[in-house]
Image (cartoon, rainbow, N blue to C red; front, side):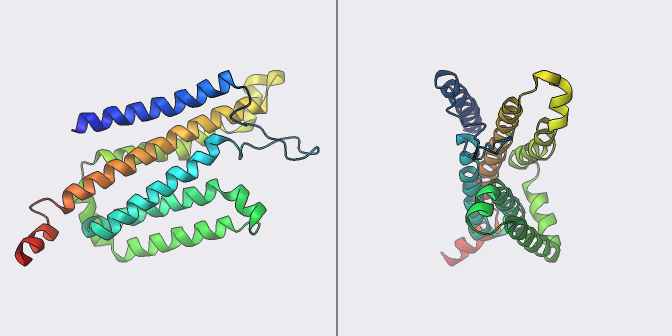
Length: 224
């Protein structure tokens, strides 16, 4: 069963990246990588790209999965809060452009700060449960995939999105649309790793919560 899951993950990653690439090749401009909002806009934005619009949906799915784990797998609740809090912060960060334009400017850092602060306080107060949850889940392929996704999002995306680096490499041939395209595809790959890691971790948490040796299963058997 595990090989089937990972084969499906492989197909998911290849299919998403491949379909987006084919669509842009056959329908130039489909990805809306650089959209100019007004005549005075010299930089353009990629916020209207299908890639950018997919990412909050993926992160919302991650939040929903971690909410399920927190509700139905109490032994893994602390890890679920940590992953869910980060997923929420990522989602708000991806929606910053629309939050600034449609709600209140600079509201998104406040939302992220509140979400992260609440998660940190919860994890600090339940530090012992967090250590127990990690000990029970480890080794965890799901957590490893989450770590890989976090490395891509925190490291690789900022590197490939560093405009002075591209200007230094390309010189006079520099085009911002190329930089935006590479940045968005790398970011999408990071979010795919994050989503797959969340799915895999939720599957692991369910297996731990409903195994015959788990406290929850023993209580269920006693009630029966």
